[in-house]
Every structure is written in C-alpha cells, then in structure tokens.
Length: 389
Length: 172
Image (cartoon, rainbow over all chains, first blue to last red; front, side, top):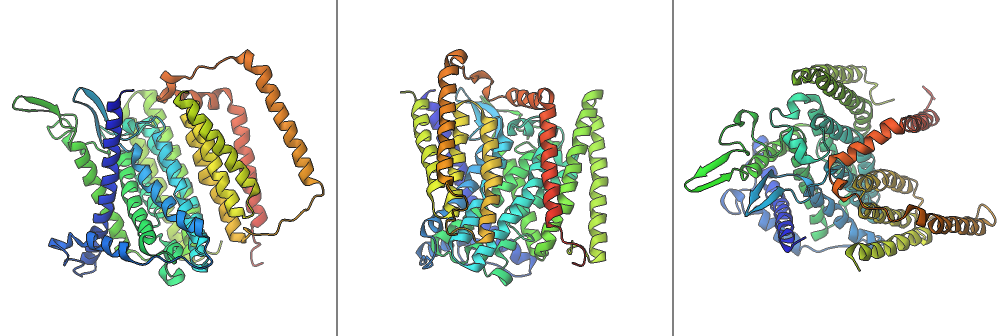
C-alpha cells in the first residue's frame, strides 16, 4: 500500500464532506426559495445576489447564539446526541459512486470513498444507526415534548426501515449485486425506476419517513410537541441537528438516484453519444474519458429529487400519527413484499429464457399490485375505520 | 507489531470495557448504549477476520434494530432508573459460577482445538467480491435451508404470538 492511495482517499473524502456541507448550506436556501415560490412569496433574497449569502448569515447567527443545557438534563448524552445524529448523515455517502471507474495519472480511480461489496448493506446499517441521535436527544433533554418526539421518531423509523430494506432488496435483485458500482452499471440501458416503478415510488415515500420530512415529520410536529426532540437544543447543537436533517435529505436523494435513477450514468437517451460518461473525448492532442460528467448528472438528479421533497412539504399536510403507522405496516410493507416477489420472479423468468424483454412483466404486475394497494387505502379511508384497528 | 494486532488489542480493550460498563451501569439507557458500543467493536472484529458481510449485518441487526427497540422500550416504560431488585436469592453467585464454567469451556476449546485447526488463512482475494456473498447465500439457502426455514417459522410464530397477546377485543 503506497502513500498515493492515502492521498486519493483523502481527496475523495474531502470531496464528499465538502459536497455535503456546501450542499446543506445551499439546500436550506433552495428550500426556502422554492417554498416561497410555491406559496407566492418572495423568500430570502436580500443577502447577496438572489439571497446567495443567506446561508453564510445563518451560520454566523447560529455560531453566536447562546447554548443552553437544561438543569436536569443528562449532560453527557445531551452533548453527544447531536454528534451521533450528524456523523451517520455524512458517513452514509461514503459508498455512493460519483463517476465511472477511469484511469487518471496512470492510476485506476474509483469514484467512491469506499468501493465495497456490501455497499447496499452498509447504507442499511448506517441508516439504522441514524435513529440513535434523535432518540437520545429526546431522552437526555429531560423534557416531555422532546421525549415524545424521540419515541415517535424511533417507532416511525423502525417501522419504515422494513420497507426501506425491501427497496434495497429490489435494487439488489435487479442489479444482481450489492456493490453500488455494479448496480449503477446495470442501469446502463434502462433505469430501475422504469423496470420497477412501484418499488422506486415506495422507496421515495419511505425515505421521506426515514429523514422525518413532511408529511411524515411527526417527531417535530410543532402543534403537538413544540419542536419535538430538539426542543431544548440551541446554538451550534441545534445547528448540528439542522445540518444532519438536510444532509440526510441529500444523502438519501443520492441513494435513490443511485439505486433507481441510474446514479452517475447519463440519461438513457444520451447513451452512446458524446455526453455519455463512457465516451472518449478527443480535444486537440488530448484524449480522455468524459468521467467528469458523472458528478454533474448525479447533481442534476439529486436536485430534481430534492425538489420533489420540497414540493411535497409545500403541498401536503402532516399525516396523523396512527395513520402513519397503519400506512407503514398495513400498506407499504405488504406492497414492498409483493414488489420484491414480483421482481424476483421477473428476474428469474428473464434468466430462464435468456431474454431481457421478459423483465417487462415486473412493471406490469407491480403496477397492478400498486393499484390494488391504492384501492385498499381508498376503501379504508371511505369506511373511516382505517385508524381504529 | 502489525497493524492488525494493534487494532485487535485496542478493540479487545474496548469490547471488554463496554461489556463491563453495560453490566455495571446503574442507568438502563447507559447499559443499552454500552451494549451498542460492544456490538460495534465486535463488528470491527468480524471485519478484521475478513467477513464484511457478517460485520455489517451485525451492525444492522443488533445495533440498528434490536438495540433501538430496547432503548424504545426502556424509554417508553421510564425504566431507566428502577431500583435494583433482588428477585432470586443467590442470583449473583449462580451467575458467577456459570461465568466460570463458560470461561473454562472457552479456554479448554482454545487449548485443545487450536493445534488441530492451525492457522486459518484470511481469504483476501475472495474478500471484496460479490462471490463471497454468493457463497454465503448458497450456504444459507442450499446447505442450511431447513434450519433457515425453521428459524423463520419460529420468528413468525413469535410475531403472531405478540399480536395475539396485545390484541384488544372488538368493543372491549
């Protein structure tokens, strides 16, 4: 192991951390501006051109705010909870590929911090660790509202993690690998969101619940719990929770893009053109692979997915807590099981007949399953007994 | 000393210290957190031994799912600072005796089997490929299919049992 590999790791890690931190800062601005546009307001536009310096102003404000620790709080856990929340939101991005494997300066470069064979499982593990910070923050604050927020979030995240895991399984089945690079490469011809539209939709709903975003933001429902688990936090400790939430949004959008929307790969209609990430560009005497398009496509996809999250927040009211649980356990979980089963059958049939067109049975049957689920929810809501049992 | 050995020694200290912390904490939440740290240390042991799949599964299943549920229950019941109750007399001594038996067994196995098995080579070339995962899958679903299915039925029975026990009668 020579020293250059350490330099390579360092550069890649710094890139990921920098991308997430800057992404967080500008995502707050993006969200506020987009929400404002949807609500026919203007939004923050005073600090710098189009409000571009607003995140800087916010950061300065939060740094100088006073930090309070409640008198009967558990000081140690109270201090660590924001950190435990923050770390997984960055670490989770370590396995996400940003570009195709390429040769630079005579070295083979893999565009992810860690190219491991259990990449998808790593995502699952880190996502399941993320709940600790919120639960511990709620518990250590010694505040009933914070406690209830923490309990709600743990119940919610555990419930929706099952469907999240099954979403990962769908992508593993279709990609025939747990390595995220392989999964992205398998989407060269067609995105998994096209092969398995219901699976992609479930995945996106579940990720909303996993990052506690509207309409599943019960842990911080202000009408009921003031600010939920971070009621007692102020100053930079609050800022860490804030950062973690937005970094999780970015990370989870990257994951959704990687698993279902082709990751760093070009849009399917650009395949075999000079805009493909595999294309070789000849400019003057230089000849090189267009790997740098990878991060650009990734960014585009993440921005679009984030816009959907913001759009949903601006449009939909918060779901009632018992309905949230019923929806997770009685609708999403059976439907994801059906989706995994249909995907497995489709992949098996396609392998047996050695013809990838047989994969078409996957979107057809899973759409039927999805429609059945929608019909079930509709019926249940009409009977108005959806929540009682 | 190689890096592996240094890592092993550090992890061994962490694992033992967190296990002791779990046993000796007065506060149940701290106990649970020590146990999580212990699981994390064990997961890194698996990584050192060249088993990334088991390492990550350890984190996902134990630290990510089971301990979160434990914490949830502790907090929901407000049981973090219950007074220590001695339900069984002589419980401490019995536990100590059983622990001694366990340690004796482990030492006996280490001493008696070590020579026979010899030094197991780390499967380095195999380690970071999908093939190692495929082998695990084949072992689970071909060689050990029956135990696997029996385990899943056991879990299903437990789940159904939990639902039956907590179900409220209609109108009751």
